[in-house]
Image 1: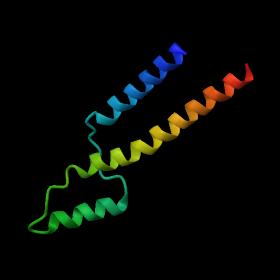
Image 2 (image 1 turned 45 degrees about the vertical axis):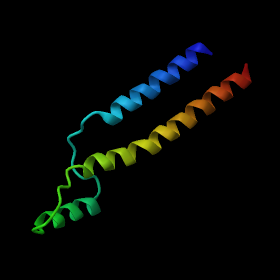
Image 3 (image 1 turned 180 degrees about the horizontal axis):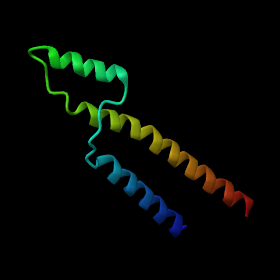
Amino acid sequence: MKKSLLFGLVIMSLGFVLSVMPHTTYAQCSLCSSQVESARTEKDAQDFSGLNTGILYLMTIPYLLVGAVGFFWYRYSHQRKQ
């Protein structure tokens, strides 16, 4: 029990650290890229530098949730077999 709890905490902390690390990426989808490009040409355009970070956050959360469900399902299925 303690090993699995410790393993879960390590995985969750690793996921958190990886999600808050600074990333130097460009807009992920073509719609976001075209939106940023069109906003840059307007004279009163805002700064859209946080858009890439927002995309990465939106992309990370579903993967973490699916991974957590998969981990608990795997652990539960192996406990039932023993």
